[in-house]
View 1 (spheres, one colour):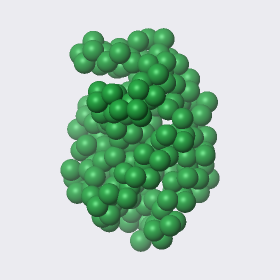
View 2 (tube, helix red, strand yellow):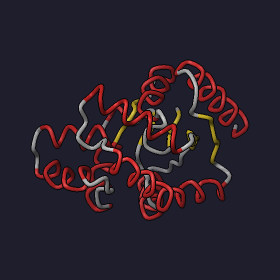
View 3 (tube, one colour):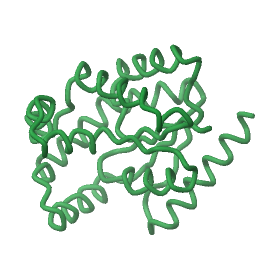
View 4 (cartoon, one colour):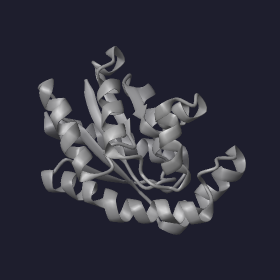
Length: 194
């Protein structure tokens, strides 16, 4: 059983790698971004609220996000392990996740950070916006999201680094190369923990 967190700046390939890791390890990938986008598309009350923040490139408030993640981790498919993508993004969310897991006598096994240069990320996201027509991927919004990542989410990275549970993986390169680096890092981390 593997319980893990995949963290990295917008455009670092978290979604792509989460899918691949989840397939290889047989665990469910839980992406807060996917859950938000589903709710926006379905125009649920959560989706309507979340869309305001997403379109501005801001984080959806912790209260909404925390409740959603708690509900998601309680579902049967997360019982045998999971990969979180896009959560936690703040230190308060780290503490909330610790509480959720502690209630079940669990903790994270692996925390991986995909790293990449900001200019590379801006180029990637602008290209993705052209291909997919995502309304939240304008250059101003992308740069704002990167700024938020550096000012808020870097504190999350530091928190896990202080605990000795963080492993950094270079997120630049061909998708298969990055996947190989990620899987090798997971194997090394899990082996050294056991």
